[in-house]
Structure formats: C-alpha cells, structure tokens
Length: 130
Image (cartoon, rainbow, N blue to C red):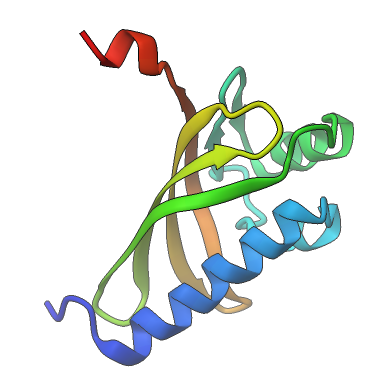
C-alpha cells in the first residue's frame, strides 16, 4: 500500500479546505454534498450521534450558526492508496475559545471525494491539565 502519495494528499487536502470553507460560511448545501449520500454515513458530533446522510443533513439544517468561526491549530492529512484519506484537526472556536478535535475519513466515490465517517469533540482543557 502506498501511503501519502503527493497527488492524493493534495486532492484530500483540497477537499478538507473546501469543507472548512463551507463550515465557516454555514454553506449547508456544500456540507451535505461533501458527506457520502448513504445510510452508512456516520457523524459523531459534540452532542449528537448521526447515522445516515439523511440524519446528518437534517442536523445541519437545524443547528445554530452561532460560534462557527474557528481557527485550525493543527491538521494532518494521511492517505492510503489512491482512494482513502483521513484528516485530523485541532481547532479553537474564535468566539468562545473552546478547543476541539475533528477527524474525517474520506473515500473516493463515483461522485468524487466524500466523508464517510466524521467525529467532532470538544477538549476539556481543565481535565487534560492535571
């Protein structure tokens, strides 16, 4: 297996950046497009577990756009072969200062690169620093 082929890393990085732009502008249509349109798509959020593209899209359409601005503190893209990539990011919300983590598994489908699983969580810095 070939890990981190430069051209595939560039493709997944571009999709990750596209996702981030859509997230910051609350472009729900683009966010919905970037998730695999299948009942097997999964998104674990800070306070929700979403199973299926339909559930993810419904959540996106109903969530508050307050405090979406964030700064990416660290990100890493790792690809496996030509059709699978994983993105990992640590971020800080601009307004609240909350720090969180996000991971996404991207797969090349007939429709292009899509997120098949995602996980977002907040980092409790007080609990982490002991």
